[in-house]
Image 1 (cartoon, rainbow, N blue to C red):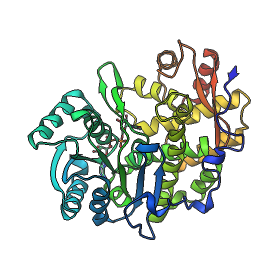
Image 2: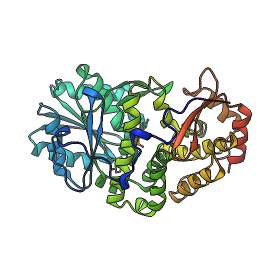
Image 3: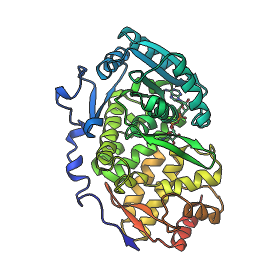
Image 4: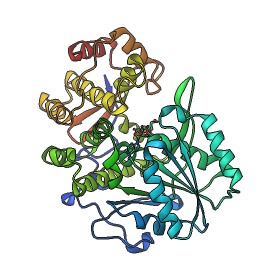
Length: 401
Ligand SMILES: NC(=O)c1ccc[n+]([C@@H]2O[C@H](COP(=O)([O-])OP(=O)(O)OC[C@H]3O[C@@H](n4cnc5c(N)ncnc54)[C@H](O)[C@@H]3O)[C@@H](O)[C@H]2O)c1
């Protein structure tokens, strides 16, 4: 086994986000943003030089979105992209944009991963052309990760780039896909094969939009939340343990704090490896090598992504134990929390040979060598290479329900 050096100091994310301040993420200096924050709003600044942007985390603050948008772009034309399940939130966004002086257009797409395609992107291009969009036109993505990725891809490519405002409405989109600028569509050969890095000009996260999100989708998003605690922040993990019921009950204050913390943690990684060049961003793939194999072998859609990630983290943690990296207790705490969130902690009885084969072809494997992000302790993870296939098989055999 060859363990790559941990990209962070052994104390964890260290300078990036070390102090937890009782879950009060640092607010930016006033001059960093143009909106006035309410007391219950949290601001997360993503520092990327001239591509820096703010994420506002709020609850039930429809009116603020328009003012926020106005502070970001000089133009007065907004193009809102959403799907049928998030359309009520998109209508709300439109009202707010209109009240702030925007002329707004709306494209409502069918829901689902199938919309992340070049053909749907092409339909949206047609609509943009029809309303004479130019480089000042603000594309507003109101929805989950599918809409964010698709509308983001359109924004990155139409007229060589339009400003993008993301309004995430799933927990996964709030804590993951709206941070970091990865946009794209799928190719029949592989997910997310066609894409770009296109940072948004801002993210408006209103946790009140989660009220309509189905329970299974919400729980699925919690898997990514747990992931951040395991790989980057032991204090945050402990907070999740104590606030699990409040989080499951979608208590606004707790949801806001959790969303903001996850955004801060992901932003800290993205700020150091914006374009996935140094390998740092790979740490965010904890549990994902196993998860992609589960999704592929089970058939996409059998499990939600977060469900696969939950079982994937459980397997990765067992693997870390086998490698002597962590004591059993670290795995046990993850399993307890994931089960509390109603998430699976083991794969179903899928053929192990198929799972291993899929992992070998994973884009994270290097020349067929299996590489994994594994916890070294709670709040810290490392990249481990050259794990033998026999080890993976053993973990899968032990894990299968
Ligand atoms: N760009 C990135 O960095 C990144 C990171 C992680 C995931 N992703 C991508 O994100 C996508 C998954 O995102 P997702 O889990 O949000 O899926 P999704 O966008 O498909 O949303 C899940 C479901 O919830 C519905 N929905 C959305 N908001 C709702 C609301 N408020 N109320 C009721 N229903 C609502 C959607 O219509 C859909 O049916 C994948 O395509 C994945 O590749 C991208």
